[in-house]
Length: 277
Image (cartoon, rainbow, N blue to C red; front, side, top):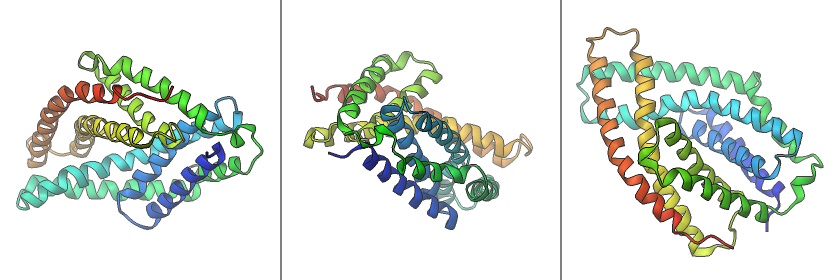
């Protein structure tokens, strides 16, 4: 059974690899995977290191870096997952072309700023402090990960259940909170929870993934509106780009309403899973 140091070391390797990709290429997986690794770190430190001052400080720093990465990630999502397929389907649409160019410029600027922050700013120090923590003699690092992660998994399921059972009644803020709880459930599994779960654990993870996908599609509508509003703010209201942006957001919001109806059903599947006693 892995100890906490093993778990955090694996996450650090993922973060270092993702950082290299971000610093040397323009593929969206770099910032995406770095943010995922930072979220896993925060989840792990919340489970294992909540009483350690160094761990608490690192958790806060990881949150701030994740927010900076999120600025680029949001632009990537809209450009690659929303605009690019539309451009492929209708390459002659001038509004789509304008949005594609504006998003490309925004992504270039955001990537440059993020790389600078990682190379010379506080962002680059987060991974160094992560490595320093692993090299320290902090008591919690050599404890087995499984028992604490198992307890955290049960707490997460209970907390998510309070939101998932009444998802259709939640406001946007609480729906977003539910989405974050589902992510934390998956990351808690990566921290060593239910390590001997076998096929039941695999099924649980797959159900969480399906639920997270539905919640992610709903979030795309929110992200698209925010990004496209920002991109279009200096364009004329009657421009083709504005018209295309509004059309895309309406379509995403319609899909989000459909996904909303699925979420409670998908949560019930997750909640059916019998976790270890």
